[in-house]
Image 1 (cartoon, helix red, strand yellow):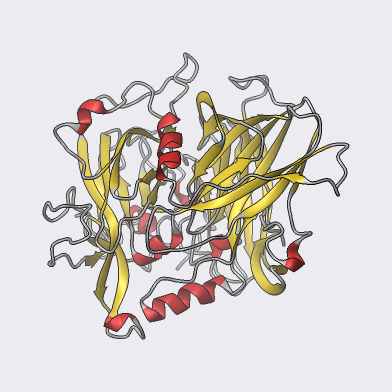
Image 2 (tube, rainbow, N blue to C red):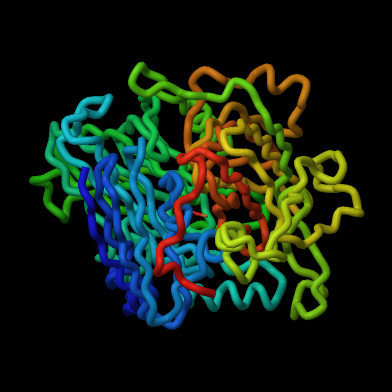
Amino acid sequence: CRVRHYKFNVVMKNSSRLCSTKPIVTVNGRFPGPTLTAREGDTVLVKVVNHVKYNVSIHWHGIRQLRTGWADGPAYITQCPIQPGQSYVYNFTITGQRGTLLWHAHILWLRATVHGAIVILPKRGVPYPFPKPDKEVVVVLAEYWKADTEAVINQAQKSGLAPNVSDAHTINGLPGPVSNCSTQHAFKLSVNAGKSYMLRIINAALNEELFFKIAGHKLTVVEVDATYVKPFKTDTIVIAPGQTTNVLLTADKASGKYLMAASPFMDAPIAVDNATATATLHYSGTLSSSPTTLTSPPPQNATSIAENFTNSLRSLNSKKFPAKVPLTVDHPLFITAGLGINPCPSCKAGNGSRVVASMNNVTFIMPTTALLQAHYFKIKGVFTTDFPSNPPFAFNYTSTTPPANLGTINGTKLYRLPYNSTVQLVLQDTGIIAPENHPIHLHGFNFFAVGRGLGNFNPKKDPKKFNLLDPVERNTVSVPSGGWTAIRFLADNPGVWFMHCHLEVHTTWGLKMAFLVDNGKGPNESILPPPSDLPKC
Ligand code: C2O
C-alpha cells in the first residue's frame, strides 16, 4: 500500500458548449475533473485549494471513510466549507473497497461542474472476478446549463418553484451533435475489433436518472457502486445521480461507428426534458465520414426497463466477496421521502408558497456549524437527535390526494444509532405533489437493497419477500416513483453521516437527514481527532 498525493485547484475556467461560452467552476480547469486513481488499501491525500469566490467542499462519494468522517466532505455536515483563498487536505484510507466511485463538490450546486471519477484498483496481484478487459475507460455522464447554475437555483429559490431543467446532457463533458455548432463536440471511444473494454460509467448529473446504451452492442454489468455483482447482459443500463456502473463490452463487429446515448429517465409527470447526449464507439480503420449505426433511447417513462434492470442486480456473494447482510434488525425505520408545498410569504411566484421536500415530514435545515464538529466538541444547540422513526401518522402515501394537515416541520434532526447496531430503512415515496423517483444516498456506509416494490409498503407481506441472501450492495438506491425500497446496514462507522436524495434540487428543498453513530469505547469505535487544518465556519 502506498500514499497518493493529489492537488485539486478549484479555479474558474471558460467553457464553450451549445453555442455559448460561460465561466464555470472546475478542478484544475477540467470538466469533468481529473480522475483520482488508487489501489485498495492506499492512503489518499488530496489538497484542495480554493481559488474561486464560492465556499467549496469536496465529497468522495462512496468511500467508506472508516473513522475519518472529517474527510467525508459535505459542507456543514462533516466540515465547514473551505473559504476563498483557503485550503484543506482530505486524508483517508481506502479500506475493503475496489471499483468505480466519484468525487464531487458538496455545497450549493457546484457539483454541476465540479466532479470526476475515483478509480480504485484491486490490491496488486489480485485479479478481477471476471475476465480482465484489454482496456478500461471512464465515462462520466452529466448535465449542462447554458446559464450559470448558481443563478438557476437562486432564481428558483426566490420564486418558490422548480428550477429550469438543463439544456443538455454530456458524455465526458461533451453533449454530442445536439445543435449546429456542437457537431464536433462529441466524445469518441476508439476500439479495436475483437478487443474487450470495461466502461466505468458514472452519473454525475445534478437532477436526472439516465438510461445509457450503445447501438448494436450488449453490455455485461459486473459492478455497481464499487461492489461486484453477478454478471448479466443488458441493452440498456439505468443509472441515478451518484451511482456508478462498470460494464464489459466486446468490440465484436469488424468495423463501423455506433451511437452511444445517455437520455433521461423521468418517472414523474412534472418535468419534461428531451435532451439526449450522444457519443460514438468508433472501430479503428473506419472512416470518420462513414455513417453511424443509430439507436433510439428508451421513452422517458420506461419504468419497466428501469425496474427490470434494478431487479437484475445481485451481489456476487462469492467466497471471496460474501454478502454480509444483517439478518437481525435493531433499528427498524420507516421513512417517507417526497415533495410538498409550504407557505413562503416572500416567494415571488407560486402564490406565496414554495416547493419543499421532507423525510418523515421533517424538512432538514442546514446548520451553520458542521454537525460533526458540534458532536465532537460537544457544542450545544446545533442539532437535535429526535428524527422520527416513522411518519407522524399513517396515510395513503402514494395517493396524489393526501391528507390536508401534512405541512412539514423544519429542523436539524439526527437519528442516533449505537455503534455496531443493525438498521433497516424502508424508504417510501409519497405522492403529495406528484410521485417521483428519489435516488437516496447514504454517506459512510454501503447498504444492502433487500426489497423494493410499487405502491404502499405492506409491513405484513413485503418483508417476507426480502432477499437476505444476495441483495445488491451499494451506496445510492432509487426509491421508485410511487413505491418503496428497503435497505439494511451495519452501523460500524462512528461519526455523523448524511443521507439525502441525490437529485440536487430535492436536497436543496430539504430531502435530507443525518445519522449520528455514537462513539463507543474501544479504539476502533471512535472517530479520529480532527486534522489541524480543518476549516472553521
Ligand atoms: Cu454524492 Cu451527499 O453526495
